[in-house]
Figure 1 (cartoon, rainbow, N blue to C red):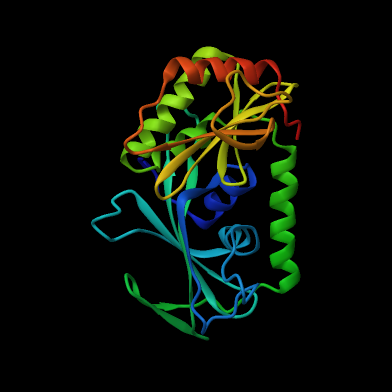
Figure 2: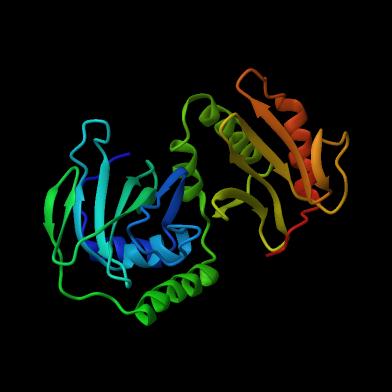
Length: 268
């Protein structure tokens, strides 16, 4: 990950509204009971809190921590009065014209005129607090822009894979490369916080997601694969779970990819 120019709140908002913001595989939402969020039971949420907050940042700084040399931190007022801190990275691929913003964490801070942050000390707050209507409108605008976006999401998928740790990144990279080899015109996107793969104008045929102890490769098609993958709930959810000690069978995965791509099962 690398950044060549200073980042501004306006630039962050532009990246969000062009569908170039994703949630990291290990996104962390810290729910402080002293801060009232949109949903007190669920705490901070991606769509309800992170997305509008990214469009309403009043301050953006480079992360001062040694462990995050390419990280950024932004602050935004929540419509309930609290202040949100968002941690994120910018991923810039070698051939990519633009960056992908990868949000890694979101947390809340209390304070009416200022807040105290563990990394930046006392921060003076802006006077303007967005209304609930403005907050909801930011979220609606993002959702509308995301639905209209028909560009290939390869950069976002690459950023997602790059954010994975160690062996999980290796598995995801192998899967992505197999799909590219078997379906050269594949289209990618990050949906529901996981990478998906599609055949243009036909449908989505595969996805993957990383959990704490395994990576799940899922095949989405209208009929069962031959041979059937070991787990899943039906033809549109046939899956293979890979743990750290497992070996990815490239020939078998390639066969399943070809079969699924010939008969995609999800049309979004």
